[in-house]
Image (cartoon, rainbow, N blue to C red; front, side, top):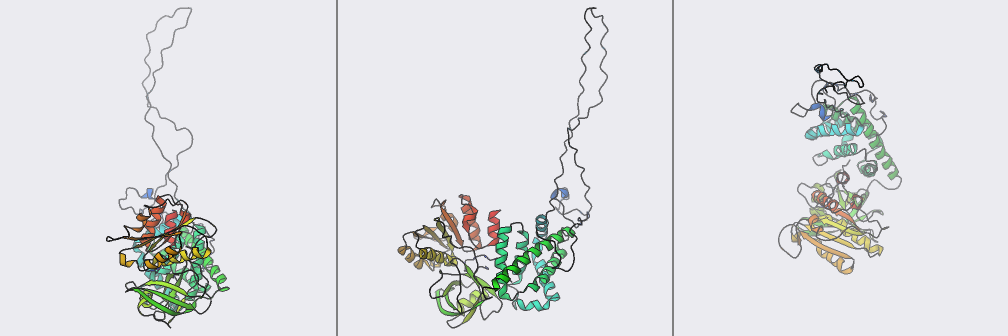
Length: 493
């Protein structure tokens, strides 16, 4: 089981209100029972003012009586009796004028404000739980897996022998999905990809209830301040929706594609001491789109999968290529760079990813590729060329130093062949003929980009800065494309 995927500099994307049905967990959550008043229930931050620590108070909070509607009455102070004027005789033909009344001074009005109602929506309850467990996420994750393997030892075979690289993936995926449950369109697309991807692990529909029970068990233990019947019902409802979307997507995918493909290494080219271009021949037709990626498993580390972008558009010979950078302690990347040789057989998960070209528009393409993130950018350029439309494509190829631009010669040859393509190398350090500085900032020196769609691939930090830069110059969010669910949600919010 996997987590959200994010394109990284080494080409390894690992480093892109539902029903209250309780059938998943075997018990009925008391969704209509309000949270108890003592400590252990979530309160609005206003209720904790004066505590000093910012934590929920350990005593019941006295409810504030609402201010009545209507005009507020001003209270008057008791005034002294008006002095009686000296009596005098008025002319007989007109009445005597009465003495003017003495105006009483009114006290200042007491200002009252209505209490801010507490948000008790499911989304708010989920977010409060997340905020509480965030400082102790490692403990919660460890407890989740301890429960899972203790109560359901048969599920241990779905995970790699060493859990140090896998440990956070499933748990983070569940939490990411639950806390974004209100963003239905984006979440559904993500969960469908996740459900299809989980087929390669051997995940079956009957496994989901076990995972859900252990998720609730871990959260209820480590989130005592926010946990209660309503919070539990919110998490049960969210997980029920999440798991059903994944199950349905996997079942539909099973009708049209295998869970994985076998692929033989047919070429292995070292570009730098730690970057290799690996070319594969799958054992069956492998349909994908330029800009997508696939999970890869090597024979040396069973059940350890890492995501890599395709470095070319679909080819007539059916071959696939990846740019892989070996990272410290990278089991899959290290094996692909330093151990794999022609004749070795690896496994591929199905293609996924939404960083694809919309060929129904004439918008230009603004492409930011950092490190081996240039691989899917190269595939996008090939895809535009194959469709034969002269759309402007502007590529900014970033690296730390000049010699890290390992594929610059290929990109410059493509520029010579296609007059609609411009390639601008950008390096962080050192003088040279290339642009200097960080990749997102370099984009601001050119443009305007109001008729372009943006594509970003590279380290998470570069993607984050790139999104901020593009939003800052007025590019709409829906025209910024990359394959990280967390970054997309963050940009949208």
